[in-house]
Length: 130
Ligand SMILES: [Zn+2]
Image 1 (spheres, helix red, strand yellow):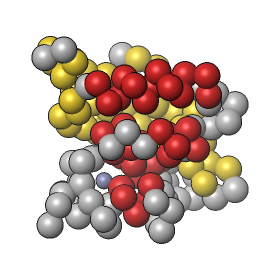
Image 2 (cartoon, protein in one colour):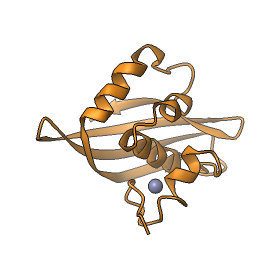
Image 3 (cartoon, helix red, strand yellow):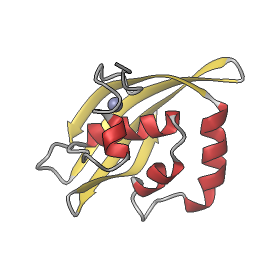
Image 4 (spheres, protein in one colour):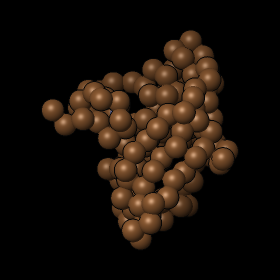
């Protein structure tokens, strides 16, 4: 079994891959967060754009995001805390730390991300860097 990149200990096929390819839905903002991390790892720019709320979607940075995520080596995702974001919520927050190496240097992104749910679909809207 190939474990999912998001660190869930589940099979990749049943975890983020199913959400990314649309056979499963992210029921919580944490699930969407995990799938977006995995999309960075596998450089699925279409999914990263589609799961980003249209009001803040960085369409112009599409190419540079793709180039950047391909240039770094993703190591791990740690979910630090979540607030709301459950199936019956319409907004949620996920604080996480994502670790990667860039030019052989360990780096991390520590962010509190904000998600909204519209038409029963979770979207990433914005993030506060820690
Ligand atoms: Zn996963």
